[in-house]
Length: 118
Image (cartoon, rainbow, N blue to C red; front, side, top):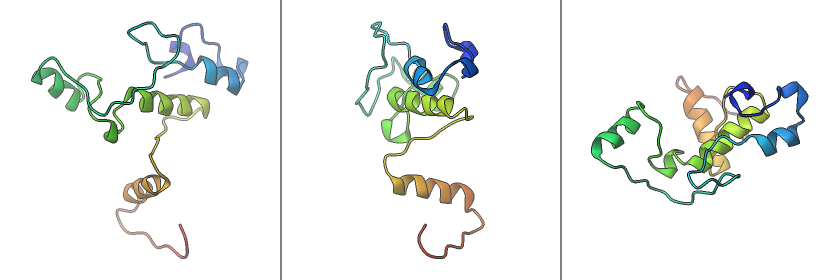
């Protein structure tokens, strides 16, 4: 999401990193909190099976299961990091080994040769 789509956002050239961190809020809390709440839940409810299927198949946005990275807290962290680094996207992992494994699986389809530690 670009800074143009954020309410009252200044272009990145006019903001320092600290300012962008503070004002880089994407989640709209249904209770009106000015800051993003921490969602420490693993599963989410749906009104019916059709709504669940829409999220699974990507027709609508929603949360499915936190271990799949489908949690509003994790998603906002990833979007905030991407914006801070002016990157297309970012991923957050629960451990360094998870990050290393994801990188190897993504880029190592033909094999990887490692000498020493990764």
